[in-house]
Length: 370
Image (cartoon, rainbow, N blue to C red; front, side, top):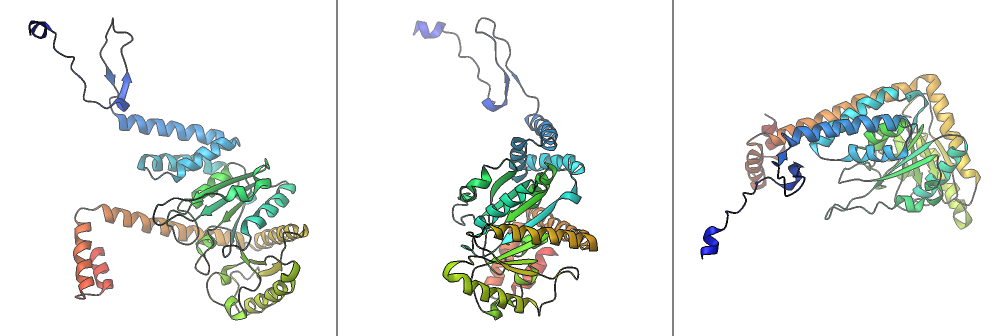
C-alpha cells in the first residue's frame, strides 16, 4: 500500500489515433513533446495534389507504371482522390495529340471470341508501329461486388508485347457494358502515347450501346448461327455498328458463318447508317486464319481515313462530348439531391404511398424533383 501511495501517477495518454502522428521523441532520456499534423485533411489534399503532378510528368514521358497508378487514382471513389484525378487529367490533356488517336469499341455476346480477336488484332497493330491500350471491362457480382479481372490471361502474347498495355476494370454495376471511369482511363492512355485504344465491353447483348458513345469506331462481333436476318435488323446495338465481324468462320462452321454474314449485310442495307460518309462493313474472321486480323486492321484504317477526310470523325466526337457532359451533369445533380437533408425521408414517404397504390411512381418522382 505504501509503495502504491509513493508511485508516480501514470503518464497521460493523448487521445489522438496513431495515423495522425507526425513525430515521436528521439529517446526516453529526452522526451520531447509529441507533435501532430495541424490538419490531416489539408495535408492529405496537398499530398494527393503533389502525387497528381508527379504522375502527370511521368505519364507524359511514357512510363507504364505511372499510367497504372494514374488509372488507379482515377478509378478511386474517394472524394479527395476524385479532386486529384481531375487535377491529373487537367495537367495531361493539353499534352494529348487527339489527331493521332483512334478509339475502338469491341462488343458481342459472351463466347464470341472478343479476347481472341483483340489479341490477334493488337499484335497486327503493333506490327504496324502502333501503340495499343486495351481497356477490358469485367462484369461485377451484384452480391459481393467482386470481379475476376482475368482478361490478361486470355491474351498472353499481347500482354508480353512492349507496345501494348492491358488494363482490366470492374463494371461495378454500371449498365451498358462499360465501367464508370472508362472515358477518363482512355484519356490517360492517349496522353501516355497510346494511339489506338480498344474498349472491350462486358458482352451482354442488344442493350450494350453505351460504348458507342465513347469510341470513334464501334465493332460488333457476332457468332455464326446467332439468329436469322430479323434478329440482325433489330434496333439497338446492330444499327450502331461500324463494322460487324462474324467470328469462327472455319471448319464445319464456315458455311454457317458465311451465310450469317450475308444475312447481316441484307439486314443492314435497310437501316440508315450512322454517318453518310461510311457504310457499315460485314466481314468474317477465324483464329486459324492469319489474314483475319490484317483484314480487320485494314477496315479500321480505311474507316479512320474516310471519316477523317469527310470531317465526320470530328463531328462524331463533338456530338459525343455534348452527350458526355450532359451525363456527368445528371449524375452530379442526382448525387447532390441525394445528399440534401430530408430527401431520403421524403423518398421513403413517397415510395410507401406509391407502393400502396395511392399515387403513380411518376408522380412520386416529380414531387422529389420539385
